[in-house]
Amino acid sequence: MLINTTHIKHLPLYAVVALLYCFPLFSTVPVFAQKEILGGFDTSYYRSYDRRLTTRLYLSQKYTRLELTAPKGVSNARYRPNTTLNLGIGATFRSLTLNLAYGFPFLNPDQGKGKTSYLDLQTHLYGRKWIIDGFGQFYKGYFLHPKGLSAGSPDLYYLRPDLRVNLFGGAAYHAFNWRKFSYRAPLIQNEWQKKSAGSFLLGGEFDYAKTWGDRPLVPDSLRSQYQNASVTQVKIFEFGPGAGYAYTLVIKQHFFATAGVTGNLNLGFTREFSGATKVDRWGIAPNLLYRAVIGYNSPLWTANISLVNSTVLARGVNPSYDYMLRVGNVRLTVAHRFKAGKKLRLFSRKIDQNLK
Image (cartoon, rainbow, N blue to C red; front, side, top):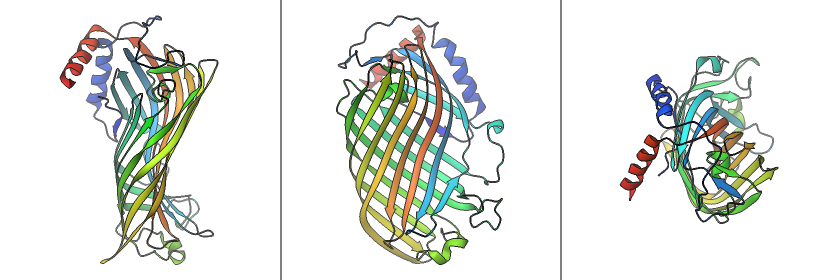
């Protein structure tokens, strides 16, 4: 069982204190030797440290963006949330990962982008054979990018405190070359990819989304250019198969760059509301999910910058106008691996027994 990052904008302080208190109980001083762990994979390509405690300090920013796409020559309406830059701590042991983060005020000065209230749940489960992603997004309050567009002044942002986006989605992909390629190494830091390798990916995804506001979604300055300018609410449902490829380039065993992309050809349903009127459309919607990481890895220390982004495209009732949702997480991570203490090993053993 893997419990990955769950971020809530205002995390209680006692939860952060509790996690800090637990670290000394669950770890001991680091050691440089590791017993070989055989799990069916090729240890000449990557090493596993899942029986050590991987602790991390990180900066991250999550987002769920809304874009109203238009024909060539017409400006797209790009709505962005004013999400916080968060400072977090976390730990991974075997299949269990816990991260806690908080957006401290000194990291988030006021830039005139309005206020966004949100609950952003992103789960990324990196098994050796399967990669599973889950999303649960609840956002309210957006600003229009770039500055000045539809705002009446080049120094201001057009604000939409009424605009909401809810999104639920999931994806699962099988990594065929899992014996030589590890997604865990760059993204949850409990493995070390020592040689370059890649893998084809095959799976599928589904998405349900709803976006709405108290007034039309199209901003005032662009309404004359959009034929669907009266739409105040959109509902989206999509599902379909997908395939892709991921590859890690390793330089001198320690420096690496990882890139992975999966594309889906989904069957999509879109329902647009304009007041009491609703119009439906079925169509084919190509979606994209990509991951990119660059950094340094070794038996004890690892540091990297990562981006995970999922794009959901929905066809509008008018063929010239579409809706696009971008869900992602940008993160800077520094992690260190410790030999697990006795209490943590006993705790993990009890979990494994309960799952049998």
